[in-house]
Amino acid sequence: MNFPENVCSGLRVIELASVLAGPAVGLFFAELGAEVIKIENKTTGGDVTRNWRMPSESSDTPLSAYYHSVNWRKDTRLLDLTNQEDHAQAMELIKSADILITNNIQSKAIKLGLDYPTIRAINPGIIHVNLTAYGESDERPGFDAALQAESGFLYMCGEPDRPPVKMPVALIDILAAHQMKEGVLLALLEKIRHGKGAYITVSLFDAAVASLANQASNWLNNQCIPQRMGNRHPNIAPYGDLYATADGHWLLLAVGTEKQFESLCRELQLTECLRDERFSHNSRRVVHRDALNDLIGGAIAQKGRDVWLERLHRAGVPVAVPRDMAEVFAAPETNRLILEQTEADGHLSRRVRTAIFEISSEK
Image (cartoon, rainbow, N blue to C red; front, top):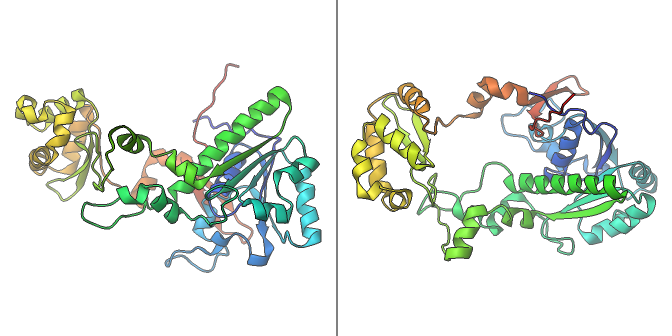
């Protein structure tokens, strides 16, 4: 794989954001070869995620695994921006920067001298991207679980007749980080064309709602409120459904086309389903999902996992085994996605690459 590791070489990025979304943007540019200077709050002992440890995590290392997830190849400085000398040091760095990443509400930004008019006055060409929870004038703090709840994700996640369940990663932060990256990249393009800096704002709430995709359209077009369906898909069947194999494993099917459904039925020796009006096309299968799952589940229960994987893969039927993290990173295709770094205390930290696209050009 050809990673564009030096495409941003020569860019200086100042990261004044904390926790996940902003630092993920800094990580993205670090992966692409930019110089990233991460400024953390000295008065609080640095980024709060330094101490977000799992119960099983060793306290012998100074930084948590969570912190490592979005901090790699960054030049970290601990500064107190309420201190005149430290503030001057930060502003001197910002003067020479191409990109500034912050996560401040407007009142805090003005108080710290980090509002865009102040920044632009000392560095007219800078691209300043700022993240908030609900907008720059809204002073509510924003944490991912609350945003999952308020944007509709939490309500949809979980099993029927059970309480809502949040997603197990801070997905709203990740989605917001992507919005921030896109804004910065477009601003860089505009700067190349016209030589002007820019100010970009992204809110966690807007990023979350903008990512509701078909679930939003199900409501906006049909006034259908998405309900908790477990792994099931509201528009496709069988899709996301789990089936137990004869040797006690689980298989997940993600059948998205009529051709795939036909192939599935032939491999499971359920050709009668192809003649059954209840399963004649996708919309009918969604209505009669339970009856269809009984037939599929009965067939899959007759043989072991590996037998079905070999047959269904060969037939072009999307099928997968739910993996835990150990299994995910035991797969050879994930090795190229791991970034390692030796920390100041000598221990090795690891995280997943985020710039995973390939760029090739004619020589």
